[in-house]
Length: 91
View (spheres, rainbow, N blue to C red):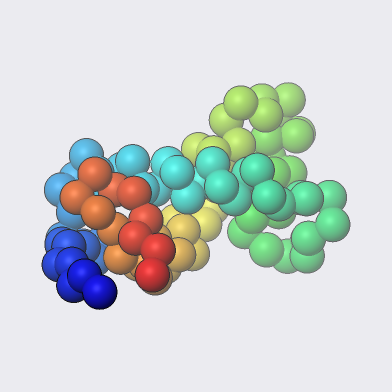
């Protein structure tokens, strides 16, 4: 058996650039797994999706998600531990 020590970080311990990477990866994950047509229409995620649809700017969906659901996204980011480069530590 080997015992290994690795350093992992909470979101708040990452530098600003790495935090932004984590945020962007989280937004990308949300957009890739969410069927926005079927989610509750009262959610901030749906409101962001609807704005992108109404303005015919789907390429801005990530920004709209951040604008409408910043607190939810940050809460998601704070649930995990990360390596220094912002990759999620899976244990």
